[in-house]
Amino acid sequence: MTRRKDRQVARRDAEEELYAPVAEAVARYLGARSEKELAGDWNSLGLRVDLPADATDGTVFELGNELLAILQAGTAELQPPFTWTLGIYRADELLRVLAPGDKPHRRCPACGYEQRWTERCYACEHPFRGAGAAPAGE
Ligand SMILES: [Zn+2]
Image 1 (cartoon, rainbow, N blue to C red):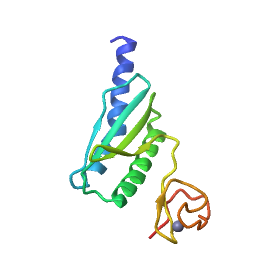
Image 2: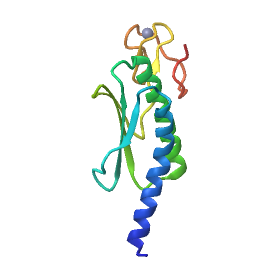
Image 3: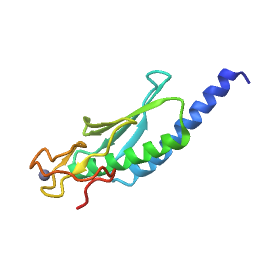
Image 4: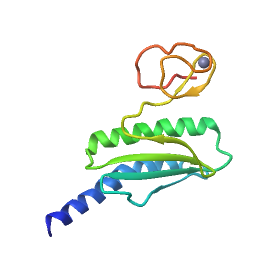
């Protein structure tokens, strides 16, 4: 086997290992589907999650944070020779894009607004305390 073939096999294995827990998590959501998109180029893996039209904003928020944690853990463990992005769609509308360096979205403990990682709530300016990775609780 050539070294190029070895690299192709290793690449495919890393893709499968990184993707498997994503597919597993998505499968727990009713009507949700996930897929690996056709490779755009050698260095990037495109993932796509489709949620049904009746999925709530809360589902998008929770699933997004869950998949981000899964993919970041997988990336740290596998050290794959490629980067990745994951798009979360609801009824074909792109709602969130995840990439390796992202931080989880947060839910404001004061008003409940769900938003990108930030120092203060966009909606009510409540300050988020601490630098913890976990989104604010209920
Ligand atoms: Zn708020």
